Image 1 (tube, rainbow, N blue to C red):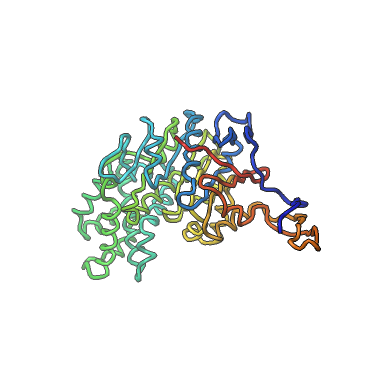
Image 2: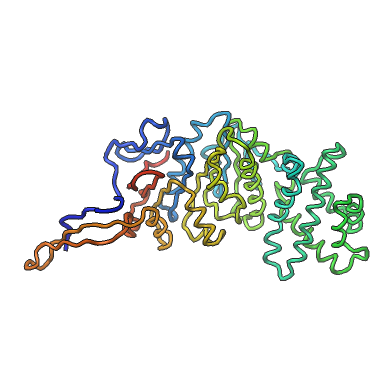
Length: 434
């Protein structure tokens, strides 16, 4: 049988763009160019609602991300800043500018490379919030150790020891006694004994309780706490992250200057350093969300963001950051990646926080269901010509989806279903990024 008529009675319709059609024409000077002179403008109203690109490997997802980033960088002002989570180094290669910052664990430093200083980010925090910040940082750094251990109490104790040590060092910096960085932290821990740390905490009444982890006799329990303490520090503060530096991501986000911060994620050592990248992104997001008003824009470009552990402020950045200038541009391969990191409920909240979705070809049913579910169902009046000439034309009222499963499956490489905050979905074919 073949369709003679297929009319939508209720619900939206998946459409196509006629040649020369530019969605949102006149609302912005930049956008994504498509085949046959079609296009989508990237205006403030669209960017403020965040953008998600979703597609299997090789489907054309990255090509669209490149178009978006190029457009946004062109319109950035001194009041804006962009933070990249760059899993493959592609964004650093294509969009780096001489004023930008690069944090990388690469053996060959890239131009613009800076070394992170955890103390500077703590000092950038208001005094009344410092203990909270230190607790969040150390909890993230020890998260894997605590969650994967058969005796998590030792990881928790090591976390508390590091938190107390960081706080004491910050107090010394404020008092002008010493300037601390990661290299000096490593040197200090190598030269310190259990007794030295125990006596240090005695000098600070607020940290006396931490001495309970370090007994005078240095028995097996004490050693268990200290082993976790040393292992985590040497694991995380190695390579370029163990070098002396003075870079604060919170300060960079505050100063803006039209710059970008590239967090180049080394896939080869990702399992070791993933918690460091979590801390860096959380600190940046927390800094923006802590503002009382919007002073410019902070763009977060998070391609393959499920690679890193759960970000504490991702949900808030998407759902409450709009009035504060937060704009998230993210890319994922499938919905399952997000659910694995955040759990089904929180993943649903995060995914629904993206106002615009560019969905490319997908091979898993769950991701296709997510795309289809954004536009709901439709009621269609379908006329069919039966293969049996005696039956003639058959009219049928059917229920379906605005975006059907097969609409996504049959997409060509580079072609996508676009779902914007307002209006009906449509097929779009971005030009190749050169």
